[in-house]
Length: 204
Image 1 (cartoon, helix red, strand yellow):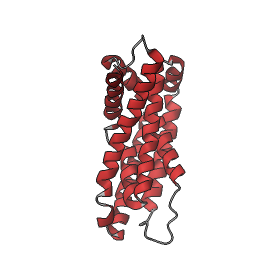
Image 2 (cartoon, rainbow, N blue to C red; image 1 turned 90 degrees about the horizontal axis):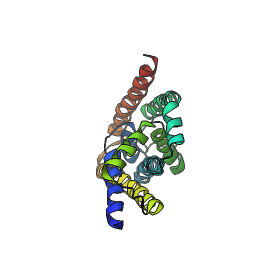
Image 3 (cartoon, helix red, strand yellow; image 1 turned 120 degrees about the horizontal axis):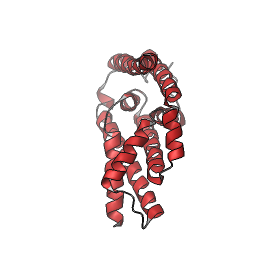
Image 4 (cartoon, rainbow, N blue to C red; image 1 turned 135 degrees about the horizontal axis):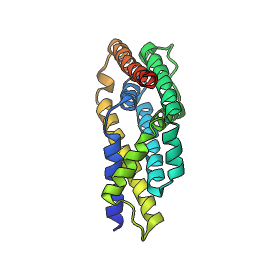
C-alpha cells in the first residue's frame, strides 16, 4: 500500500533524526541567536542529508555506501575539524542584536548542517538495517516504493527538526542579549568538545 510505504519511510526518518547531537545544538543556537528562519533552514539541511543517505540505502548502492564507510577516517577528520570551527565561531559570536554581528546566509546555514550530517557515513548502515527490518522497499514496485520511502524519510526527519525548531522558537523572544551571549558560549563549548572527541578517537 502507498500509505504504508510512505509511513515506514517517515518512521525511519524520525528514528534517525531524533538523537540530539551537534547538529541539533546548532539548530537551536541559530534559532535563538540568528533568527527563526536560520534555525529552520539549518534543520532542513540535516533532513536533506538524511534523505540522501536513505536514498543510497534504499537503492542498495553498495559501491557508494562502501566508499563512504571505507573513507570514514577522512570524513570524521573533516567532521571533527568542521565541528571545532563551528563551535569556535559560535563561542565567539555575540547576540544577533549587536550591530557588529554578521549573520550567515540561509544557504550557508543550510549547507553547513548538510555537510556536517554527511560526515557520518555510518548512518547509511542504520538506514539499511531499519529499511530491511520494516520492509520499507517492495520488490514488485521497486522504484516507486524507493521514491515514497525517501520522501517519507525526508518528511519524517524534517518533522523532527521542525518540532525542535518550534520548541526553540518559543524562547526566541524571551532571551536577553546577555543570556544569548552566554548560551552561545555554552553551545560553542559543547560543539567544539564533540569535534575534539571525534579527532581524539581518530588518534587513539
